[in-house]
Length: 108
Image 1: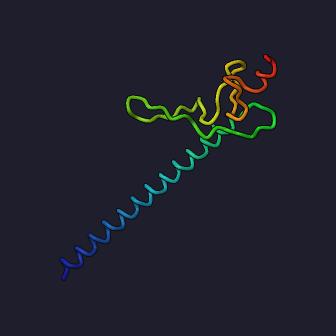
Image 2 (image 1 turned 90 degrees about the horizontal axis):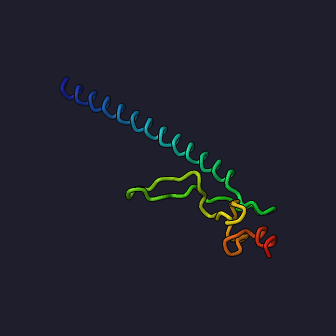
Image 3 (image 1 turned 30 degrees about the vertical axis):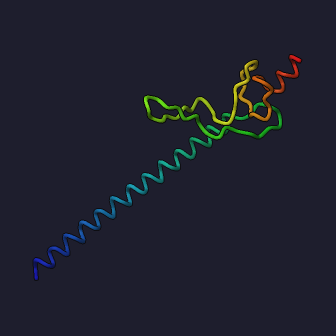
């Protein structure tokens, strides 16, 4: 009988420890996800189409393949293009060739 109780106690202790480890891992994963979400939101605030009145922002950092592995480039946005003339970020809606509509009006 004592062996059975000992096994039950050991199983309970193992299960409790395993549950605590899973809870810690889940809390850490949630904290990492929140940190990444905040970082993406800051990225989107930094990279906005420079045309007055346009609210288009970056879709997130650019994902680059480096030696077969993906890596986030936080210095480049996705969904925006760099104007070849004024070097501001613009959305595709305000792109005329390789320059923004403001630069296109100035040139032409």
